[in-house]
Length: 341
Ligand code: PEP
Ligand code: MN
Image (tube, rainbow, N blue to C red; front, side):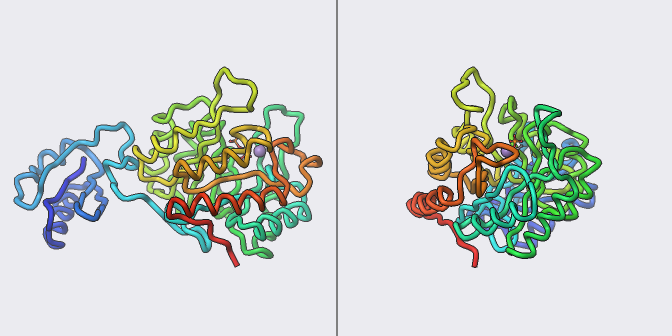
């Protein structure tokens, strides 16, 4: 339920409502907008109704949240969520670029990638240590050794790291190393894992399931938020359709839709979205133009030697040309790409 306060409400009046809700055993979330103050009540709807808060003169109305996802909905919190990771802020005016190889292959390969993407303007380093592969015979990732390499490369370059977790038993170890924990498309509805991630105070990058509707995706985000972790970044990475010319169909229309429905930041992964490096620059520019808060791009120093997803990886040179373009597109929209020093 949300409690919409009258325009010009005083701080102590807001506090009065918060106190009454909390005394009744409900959680509260305060959202102070430019014109309206809204208090989100977390818990049993019946209890909120029984409090008859709309009888108070400084309460405009008490409304149920109509969407099945509550905490992550714009009804619950009008202003967009933003939070810091390293030196950058996700969900604000900056367009945040995460880049790096699909998989951590060796310390040399990751360091070379990290230095390259950093110089080209990326703010966050990506690299998979636990790899969800379609075939059991493909390279499965360096696992914990990969996490250690990521941590050493972070030490050397100062770039925060985003890396994937594949099951609830490894949430602890991944959380020890990662600055952002990635939930891959195949795990979007791994509800046990989502619950574990909800207990952390660490940003979670939640990829859209390859056949998930936007509502299912937001319900997965709600699992994490309802556990107490509100730092969720949504990542559109393409969905499965009848089309076979691209690896997936990158649903850029999801950006405005999701931004309308939720206050969470939304980024786009054009690498898995298209499966071919040739289509990555144009779809990246389109994603920023459509309002994405950031991008996740696969970059490899020598894509032809990559152990995973070489066909969709940009070289460092191509990535550098792309970030220059992205900054221009972002500036048209009053945003920008922030280079890290
Ligand atoms: C990845 O980012 O390396 C990855 C496996 O992505 P997805 O889960 O979107 O396929
Ligand atoms: Mn990949």
